[in-house]
Image 1 (cartoon, one colour):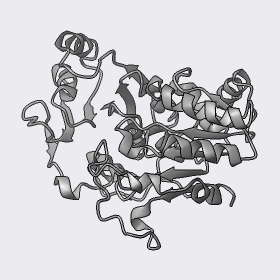
Image 2: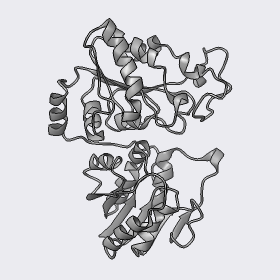
Image 3: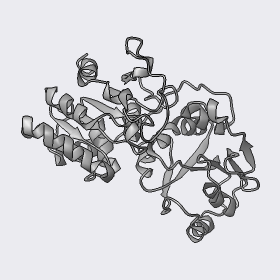
Length: 336
């Protein structure tokens, strides 16, 4: 059996998008260990049928962290036959190289001559494929690029998490109002609040500590109108707990974010709101997900010639790609 090490991406959404690659590798008989950063590792623990074990690398954003990578490389010597390096950075390929793994596969990335034995050409920036086929290509064989990522949460863990949050399965909606990239990907907090006030079930807000302020504002507004209707768990849960809360929800409302991809892979009904980014590149891959994007709304006037801009903040200062998506537009889909 081929012993395979997968170096995971550093973003939650990208990690979800690698599941079809792991499914493909596992199906052809490879025993998969994933090396992931701590904030991404829970995604891979929700792939029990694909992943044999998960290694949590204590690396941080930025910097090469030579000594830590060399330490892990020494620990992993002679344990693997092949490494698949998902990120494009030079530093992400160092550990498999130093560990002496015979085959090291990845995109050319940041001029990774030598550190990789098999380099795929970088796709043109203006024609980069969706993320699932982008990662699937590392597997090397012809494959179905329409496959949807799948995650599985342990039912006992979900029930225990919900009990601790005083929630019941299907008894609440989950909102993920954050987006790591910037405000041009975030539906206005006031719109989230208005939507929450109109829903018949309570609303749970999920996100990281960086989302705490916007979630506090939403919860304050909602609970003034409907006391106790909105719980804010942003910054107060682990990713495992947030994933469990998504798994138990009646439906989910998200921006284009990592939790959007998690909800899609868990097959939870959701509405995903897009603004500056494109669902043609990073859609929620699920038959029970609906995308709201004014760019492809033929009834919207004047047409959004500026979208997708992929900017962190609106270059034109109006962010109407998100502001003009009304709460009732999302409510209509949640009510179906």
